[in-house]
Length: 135
Image (cartoon, rainbow, N blue to C red; front, side, top):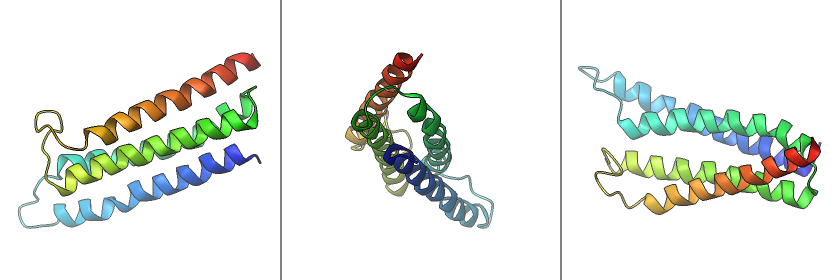
């Protein structure tokens, strides 16, 4: 097992665990009198973290196919893991501060969203280049 595999697997487990743990406040909120709706960004963070965890597990196969050096693959893995952290942090802060719509409310978490988008894109491009080179 390579360092890249380990980064993606541990990152995936931690991200998936965070998403699963967010199910508890969702349940607690929904069990209140009148069954209030789950806050938008709590749901977004929960679902997004679960999906991100699964994505990281799937990228283990992309990393194994890659023809790039281990340094490039490790960099790509860290970038994709960092992306999940940035996005989860953004959505968690939006939830905890009561943001209804991050764009309409001009939430101050926009830099985290941008960082998440850029790191995900760069990480995926590295894996795509490595995988296409292997074909």
